[in-house]
Image (cartoon, rainbow, N blue to C red; front, side, top):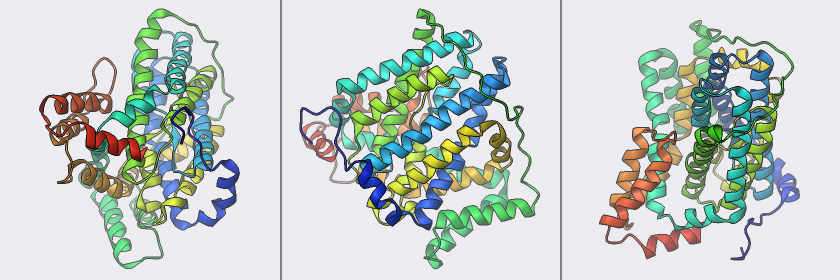
Length: 418
């Protein structure tokens, strides 16, 4: 890539489409399915809960879901095909929690205006190339430690599920490792999901979820722009998109050996934020956890073909957005323990790579990496900004003060990788 280029070149959508069916197989399809189920289940409850507390109409709630899921799906399909990388789109889950809390103070039309302004901030940062330069400067061990700390909760969530639903979670975990060892023809994550689903049906655990909305037409809201909403919603939401979701996805892709198009990922997240805002949604951007699932070894041994998992995920995500009112109750009927366990198992490979790249003996920045790991694992939130962003800040600060090998070797390595 030329140094002067802001938007990274890629093979192109035509090349991605041409090779898609060569890489579309049981493994890529199952990884895309698992990522979609993960994104369409628990996170949707945050949006629905926030909408309910704010007193939004059913149509406004459906419009919110349509905006983030349909546009998130389009982001997945476009970036995956253009770059032939598993860059997966969705929306900011902590951003949804931030917005849900802010609706107690701001009217929804003010929030919608703030969504649009947040998208503008992200877009401007992307088109300036600033985010790409920052990510290239960050030491690799600190980025990888942030990824490990941010995603470790999914692995521990799979273990915690044993306490809440031991039969379902236990059967899912056993099926995963049994398939990994003895049944090479079936992707372990698919085997785990199918076995867990069968056990859930057998134990009567399917059907407990519920939703308070029905299939209605989206109701769009005219935005209102205020300074207060800009400061309280737009700025924190933009930082969450960049410092949490995009940073996680970038680190995950680096850990798996890809060269992520950082500037393009930021620009698209900005465009997604603006478009979603006009439709009544808080942001459509790159997704950290779902990128982790689609880029993991569960999507196939051939890294070049894992982008097909993201395409599958994007199609399912977009379809969910189109029929959100009717689809939510179906997805909500799946046991949370099953979804959490499968998601945790799917991230094992990414977590192993992140820990190896963070704490390898030959690497510097070890103190900074450990601080980044601890902060990311803490799940702390300051000024409305979640832990992954503060993990990078704290890790760099600690490394600058303490680590003797903090600078040139690692910075150069990250620059060459991106």
